[in-house]
Length: 212
Image (cartoon, rainbow, N blue to C red):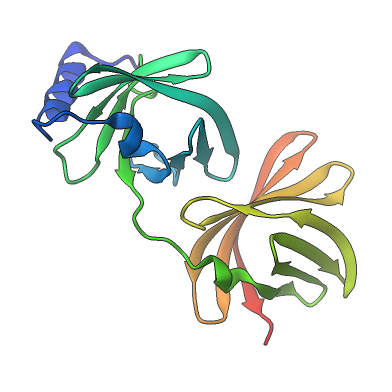
């Protein structure tokens, strides 16, 4: 694992110092907001509620967090048993820096300001002639050959890009997350995440057509 070099760490701290001269209330700046992790190497997002941070990709990781102020421009953010420094950035590429112990642990965060319309998902979505889903009133129903197979509550992230639920396909395969890649008038392009006995599995580029 690559360690942060002193020069790299110093540059990030200097960049973070340049964004604002006013005091920053980091807790209010991140709470109930969603951010893209621009340096993750994958399409990853993280959001902060009152007490939880939730990382989204094709797996979802939830942790407790809290923020303690160090100075007007610096704070420490605690994730369960770990902690890191958080600073604002002057870069147009990202808004905040969470400085980890290593290069791979350092997060560059850009706020997600776009939001999909949650109501758009209500309705029946056809994936194949024998597989479809109906989303309505906070629930999702999976149909196989027009027969109800499984029903689950469904929840959304703050941008309505990720849908979380638990639909059991078999004893060792649970479909539990969709990541919406693109929305058209009557279709969505999604990637799916599954829990299996062997770990995690994914399915990419699934097109669902909305039933009229």
